Length: 403
Image (cartoon, rainbow, N blue to C red; front, top):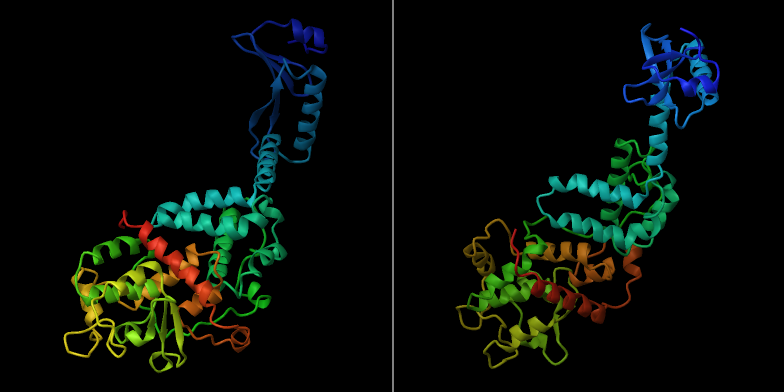
């Protein structure tokens, strides 16, 4: 078979089959009449004959095809398989392209991948909300490969102390997204959002809130339907429990509340230091619904009278009255104290405009960090009033779905 040496001879060939163009280069003519370039060689890796496509005759000239064949032959001489080298190049190109994916794009992919694992469908929205608020404004449009520790700190430092729990969740989510990207070969290297052995060496210790133990709590997205059921019940226990939920107060503070502590005009309930766990007077801003509850309680408003009266005269409800009610509502898996955790979880996930300090003040928590406690100025009553109004609004807006 004559070797095709000129572009004219290549163009004129019509015969179906392989046509030698020299140096391992062949022109293949198909049954349909299309022409394409091939490089035939023996793989130095497997010692088998292989064919590597070099493109269509329509787009690749004879001169270009010869150059491609020469480059392929050089690889063979150096002990490399041209097809395998091409695959490596394609992988590297894909990796390069993947590394140009933005943090937001990878975050969306990560959330979509993890969503089937989550029992509560609202977790995905919680991730979106926190990332949209804190991470995406700084990291969102950047290639993930460009994200470093300094950028992570720009996200976290403004909220690390003031919104400690939110900051912790945001950091964990960024770390998870980075790990997902690394597993998918979108990025390499150490995770800049890792806490242990990395960020914990840079960021100060977050505010430690004094909590003795965790109490089984109702998921905050179920609070609306719970209150809807609760409002179908009569009696002081039902009113007291709803009041407790709306004020995020402790059981003892509510069942022992007296009218002398209530100022309906100023919409404030002042719990004396003698009844507070921390031994300090606590002012509680009363939301609209809490005021309605108090206003509708039939009473002569004797200042020494309990707001929520028990069966015995001049006595408040028993310590177990509210828990008994919860169990009667077929909610034996939660505790009354757990409603404070319900409020705390809602505040951390949904109330992003409020600082961690405001939320902790609403719960009357003790701050162990003395330096942080020294910065407190007053009890932020009006700011907490806004927080509790937002909580009241949330409970009224979420009464249709039940997980």
